[in-house]
Amino acid sequence: MAMDTTTPAAEQGTDHAMAKRVLRKIDRRLIPLLFATYMLNFMDKTILSSASVFGMRHDTGLVGQQYSWVSSIFYFGYLGWVYPTTLLIARLPAAKYLTANTLFWGAVVALTAACTNFGGLITVRFLLGVAEATITPAFMFITSTWYTRDEIPTRTGLWFAGNSVGGIVSSLLAYGLGHVKDNVGPWRWMFIVLGCATFLWGFAIWTLLPDSISKAKFLTEEERQFASNRAVVAGTGATEETAWRWDQVVECLMDPKTWLIFGLELCTQIPNGGTQNFANLVIVSFGFTNLQSTLLTIPYSLITVATITGTGWLAGRFRQLNCLLIVAVVLPCVIGSAIIYSRAHIVLGVQFFGYFLLSTGPAAMPLAMSLVQANYRGVTKKMTVTAMLFLAYCAGNISGPQFFLSEEAPTYNTAFRTIMICYALAVLLALVLRFYLQWTNARRTRLEGFEGSAGNAGAVGGKGLDDDPDSTNVADMVNRVQLVSDDYEDVTDWKTPGFRYRY
Image (cartoon, rainbow, N blue to C red):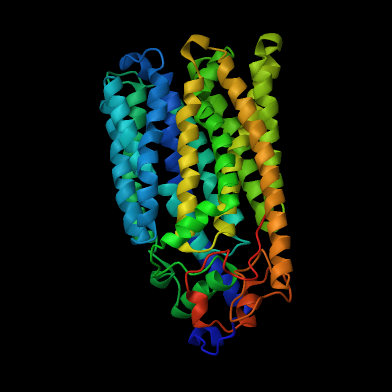
């Protein structure tokens, strides 16, 4: 296994000050860009809910389940494009590809204001799904490219929190524009303003986001080499100059953890698809006005932001906590949905409390994404499981709104019974996944004869980094080995000795 050919950069020591400087530079450049983009990404989803109570349903003549289909059709577009786009993400320059998607996405959002009927709405919503299918898979690829396995959960939590901050900004935007009295109508202004802002943001991505580590002009040549070595030693491997490999696709499909994560994502996204699009209608059913319902989504979003960032930090700090954190954020949702389902026998204040218990549920998705980013090696395998994650995401969000039956308004009993069952299944799957990953780690240690680590990339420099498996010091990890040419090969987690799973 040992190799005697080293890369020149691997022979250079790295001081701790430079390691901190490089991470700080990466954070300052990437996180604000990803956060702001994700904020806009979520705003066009929540703005639909606001538009629904500010005249959109009336002006476009929506009846029966048509609004549910306007909500769901977005995910058909997403579903159709998510796998092709995961193939392209690893092959095309990240900044340029994201820019093209963002410009298209912004234009589609703005054009929603021109819709006058059901046919127009489902057309633009389908195209919006196509436009947005690239965003989250690309962000997952970027995060796993630039960050170590210990850093991935926290950074994912930070940019994913843009989701809920977007919900807050969207609510404030809807509240402000909800007072507009003109021939255009407040709901149309919501889409015009948001679409134009998104389109302009595309140019910021073009200017500021580097295509790869090797093309990051905000880093010096020495810093770029260290950033690359970080990914090889303490991350999930190199991601540049890799080819699509069908053997990795097969391995991904044979991997039990792939299907457990798929099931977990499906069970958390069926509830998400419904509550995201019917939030304002549910709040109105508690007796609040349209404007009040818009403002009341703000504290809901604040709880979600705190939950996402807090659990993301904990998952990054503790390598054996991820699945338990999923259980912790999902259990309140089981209780909350049970309360709302039984609302006929419960006082209004408790019903409203039950609704707010659902606010922790969205934190399950970034935790599941972190498991994918940190537990898979091999670019093709990683992008395949990413596509599967978002197939489940789409399936859940397509079906979720369909459980909100128009004839059951405003209580939506079928919907909240389904939400309760799905979240309960998610708890079970998270515990099974934790047990499986624990068992797999123990089995690999027994077969390989050394401890391995869930904090580094496995065996590099021809040996396993097992002398301190709990180490979190990236500079020490890089300095401890001489990287050999094989370390830059595109190898999966199954075929990497010393690679242990976070759970």
